[in-house]
Image (cartoon, rainbow, N blue to C red; front, side, top):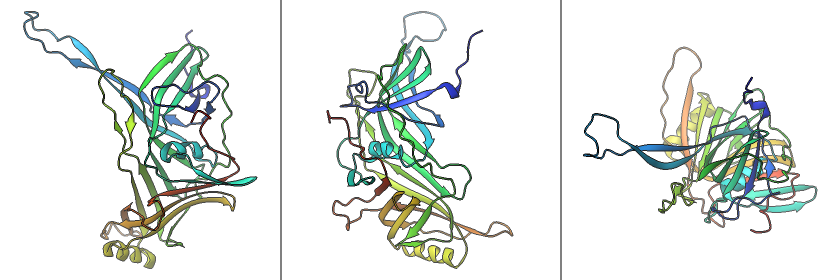
Length: 327
């Protein structure tokens, strides 16, 4: 009887590439845990409606289409692996060494995004190799939830190749440390917790654009576009919620922070130095407690030395998120 593929038998490994066209080197891969992924390589067929080749009413011959490669990657939010994803999203961090505790500061850079090779083991003799993977976006929620927190990454890539054996070499163990409980997280305005907010969802996007140079059905790379960071929030219509309503309608800018803290040396903080909510209204939805819905976005932060509008500060016991020596 043919054996089905089961999720519990799958394994994923990720490694940075030296450049977009070069696969990651053996023995540089790290295992990465996941919940689900929609990463796929789609290559459609194009209709070729030539007239005069046959005198019949029949479908046209199909021509080879272009490769569209990408999808979402849903993974655990822990204070180890998150550094790999932030490095892909924002670039190599600046790390402060206070052994055994380290602080890694990630900021959006102006250079190219780091491409990766991602290898998925489906069976002992079946591996799918995704090359040219870049982290285009990240989204995370903040709410009182059970279980562990999850991240959603938006990935873009070049192509997928089926292998009969792993090309990753020796794979390093996953650096899963300090899973973040679902109920953890705070959101603050100018250093003061926003007590009326019951849930929020943050989205950061690099808005990459593909290099459409001819010569191959796959893209030649991805250029970082103008990044955006948005946040949607739900707040109770309390006095504090009314103050947020007034803040939004006045167009007041402020410093926004989202933090997931397990201890003084184990945390992740997103800082948006100049944030603004769009003007909002106050609808009434039945007899129950009423809520506001707010949408806002980050703006340039002139107070940051490099004008970084979004700063991720990761505190953990991982010494480095540096790239391999070739970089």
